[in-house]
Length: 245
Image 1 (cartoon, rainbow, N blue to C red):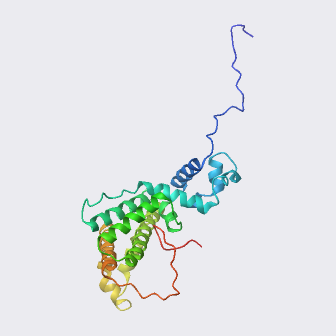
Image 2 (image 1 turned 180 degrees about the vertical axis):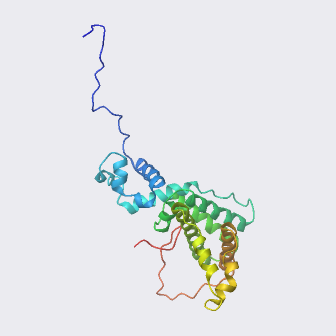
Image 3 (image 1 turned 30 degrees about the horizontal axis):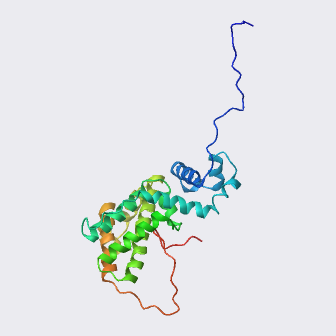
């Protein structure tokens, strides 16, 4: 061996130190995993593997997967832009807020599907709820109608975001529907035949804007059904009235 040659001894076990676990790190990792693999690829075991730890170690920071989903959704909803007070007519601010909510759900893979089955209750979700209620009250909507109306509005926006996200992620298009409608006979389906042009008309953006106007008009002008004393209040969430399991 040449005396002038030095050899650096490197341990095969050497590797970068892992970042310390925390609830924040777990939620951030889960959101990154959701963005890469979608909702079907998300599990506590998968999150733990990404963090190079065991699934049991996550229970120090989370009660279960449902709590992780709730934390993930609330973190993501922090990107929703809240309109400035009195910056424009209340309906315009309401629709701008709902549009921002839609964009956040739609632009991130799996997030809209997560919102359809998750009940967020964190600070970002509550800020959105507070703003929605305030805008409807500003429009003169009575309390019960405002409370029920928020649920209806967010459910619609979440459902549209989920539908469009699934279509985008799966590569599905409406050609099959268009072909089916174009092929119907006037004798068998006279109304579909007569309406097929209207059924296929309108861009998604225009249809969604029209639907929001219809829903808002219904909230403002509609009446609240009489409730019996046995009626109990149901828990609501920003995003959907559907409950998981």
